[in-house]
Length: 308
Image (spheres, rainbow, N blue to C red):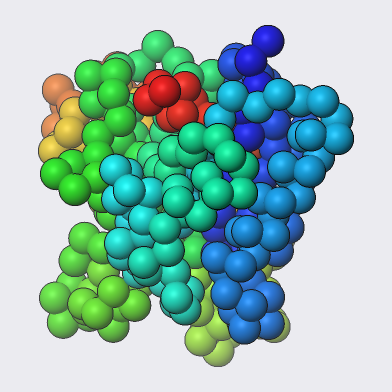
């Protein structure tokens, strides 16, 4: 049985583990990514985690074939370097993950964007199995997409396709961390949802998380119910646009809110079907992802297997 290390580097946490060639988890763990608002550089945390999993693998007699990495940001896959980011992670642009991690593991390393890894994982062993044209659509701190076209991940000219959160929907709208105004994620991300909720004067108290937002919607807090309807409409419109451009077989919705099937996924599905031109709606599947938190690591491993 061949074994691989998978790492999923996000702005909040670094997940890591050991997997077999079928994507089954043999061991996994998680460490914080953001230490004191990045006073400890993210790349230093990545090195620390890499050394932890390297020691664990050797002490437990796991022979590792190679290492697959899922990373937040725009990735130059040829060099394994972060070449862009729309967030606020100091020093992350320019981090050469491939070179850094190959020096620690003494194994070959592949690096891919996190949304792409989620799509690769779902297409491999998740709900995306059997679909050759698939979009994994993530709603979280931002909005992203991993796009499978004709059975292959679509990366674009420079390998950085899928930044759907930065489609401009209002050219005179809210300022975005990318430098533009009116980007989709300033209206449709969970971050934006919580900001909007906490600016409302009619709510009973501040909303601390996406989970709390949906809990209070379930208790029929009317101002939040109205805000949710707007949120659903944003995503139904965004997905409609993607379907009209790419004509996928399936849209799988991921991120921290993807467990909200009755309150979110089903209303998005219903509204999207109403907005689509009839031919595009034919046989289209819209549902939540299956693999969720482990998708980045699993997709990173599959990406390594595909390339090696």
